Length: 226
Picture (cartoon, one colour):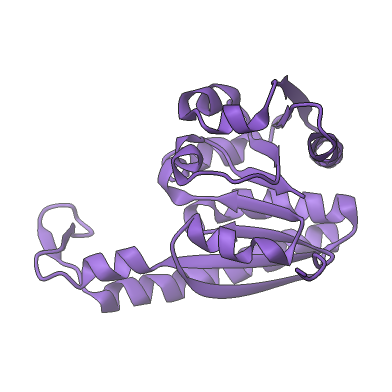
């Protein structure tokens, strides 16, 4: 038997560029459901492997020339990002009186999120691939009335997701959008259909098997419930 989910909100992301947005969302949710917040920063092993290749280069700070990139450069960047995220987490959670923890793991999204999923029935995922360029816009969205979208097929699991989405929308003083579908699995199997739905600041889904291709198609964080 699997252990019962721990009473916490779990936020998993792989880049400091989306950290502020993920922390704002997960902290608001943790406050709304009266839980602690567990933050997991996933440091990409693929980036380290790529940096170890002899031909890997990156533009210099001035942008005038290409320079070699080494695993030590990536390690240094990871250390700086982790320190920045700790500062962000401390500041954001203190505003809402939410207890929190942060840990660093090595791996790749969304595989790491899948491995961590047993730790909580409320898991927020934010991946850097689609969000890096849009992070500033998305964060600015939280300064207006953010949009919380939820996909529901009428099942008990979907109703639970709708309940959590409603709580999150209220905590953010945002707008709730409900997408009714015949079967959530069918929607998740079509990346384009999912992309059409997620013109929002966060998408709430019942806990289902979410394919990596579907996650890559989204333009906002995903909250899995159940």
